[in-house]
Length: 385
Image (tube, rainbow, N blue to C red):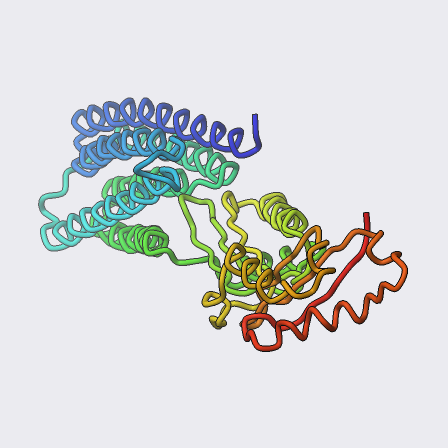
């Protein structure tokens, strides 16, 4: 199993486990709070129980989105399904915002209608305290899983659990304050908590929306990407570096400048090392595309107008037809650089050792034969077995 597969399996397991446990606990808490609120004469606790029922929706959403995001690339989704998680995170952000508006609206209404407040009993106080403890544990447990598998979706759901916890704190303060003769304390605390939940909703929603419009890595993370690429042997420079985030992970596209005369296989090896080092040293990077450049092509050169190999070799054969030694060539390398073609011609060693052979004279004759063809710039010759 590859490292990427192991990470994906761990993420799916974390999403499934937290969603199922959260759903079960939310169902139990909702039943306890609604019953305790009804028996204990606490309208706020009944409303908080209904809030816990709404958390079931988020757990189901997390479970469905997590399973979708785990699927690998296919014909319709060549980059995978990670952004299902991003969309679900955005949806949870809206859900948190709705919770904040609901809490705030109810608090303001109760501020202007204090006569509607009931007189709660100790059973309501106990149920509320139990809810706070359970939801706080669920928040920290889910957040730990989110950090371990780097899942924004789980982090959003953890904060949803925290919103239920803090709303229960409001209920606790309100019940205690009402029992102590301070009925307004509940509503004032509720407004403050609503603002806090709205801030969390905004942060989660903004981050998810930024990812959906392909916002890249920023600041230190982007600088780490650059330094990691430059640390690979054979890399002269980089340009056209692009990054984007996908469901808690990131992809990188980069053009890497190498020595223009390295072999194709060496250039490929450099690209493989760049890819592996990025994935190994920067946790969130899951996909890397490396384009090997012999020269800086950020500003388009005229090389794209030059003839390809078959036509170039035909032109060389025509230009060198009057040079008998040229017919002994074994291999020709073409280097497309700075709007022209540099040529390397390989001859057998015997051609150099033959009596009367003059390597420099041969190179000069080959170059002079190409002087009238602007496509070709320079000629180098080599002898060997």
